[in-house]
Length: 316
Image 1 (cartoon, rainbow, N blue to C red):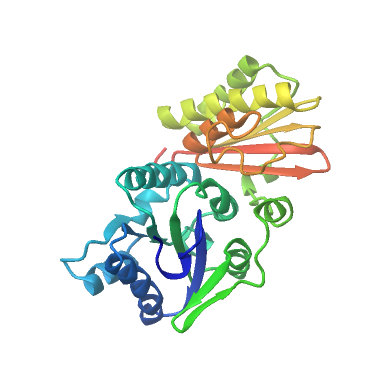
Image 2 (image 1 turned 45 degrees about the horizontal axis):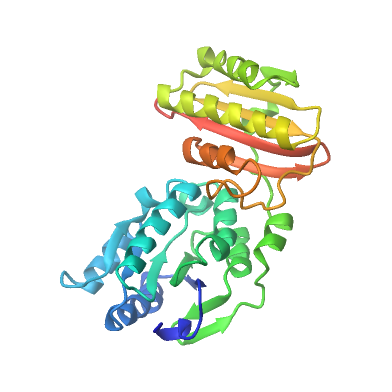
């Protein structure tokens, strides 16, 4: 039987909270974790430093809460989803009827672009719904920008405070949110003329054109190979599922390559595509891109549907 606010509910229960001090953080997160332990539920904390240290000190060495380093866990949304699902599948196989997970999702206030993490927060209401997951995603109002705080209210069904829990009046259906709320991250490098600009290239020609930019970028081998495979997959998707003409553009600077693929079609109906393998037409290729690229953006505009792939090698 599920405990706490999730009692009597199936699937994911997805809450957020807001705090502006370490004391408020502990006032919200500690009871959530301690109630899970008291109920005998698998209870997981996924926070980066210094929140990880705060919780470790407050819980004590004897606590059964699993403390995961959030900085390593939240590398990319698709990676985080895969890790969460594997973990929850293991707990359910062992008989768990509820799994509590509290974690802080990256955002621009900690130096991470927000767009694909906003997609993650909306998609969580679907991609975890086949597990008895009770999730709490608190946000620090001292560092999270207003857009992030607004999106947190729109992607979580409830808001938790030290005095209780109430429905979020701003919550939106994930499909509605993904279709209307997200703005592509601005990339200053794209203000320059594209070094590659071709119409209707084959996947092989696309790889060759992007690979030629290695002379400028000097990416690490793994980063370059991941980008080339992702470019090929996205071009193939556009040729198979999109509407011509297809346009491939690319920009490069030392340690960085940006690739955009635009076709005249409307793009996938499900904008969570890429966060899970095989989710809809072209889902595997986009999922692969989400696994290997530094950043992936997707949007609909006057020119059609665009996928932007970014590969970074900061030490190049």
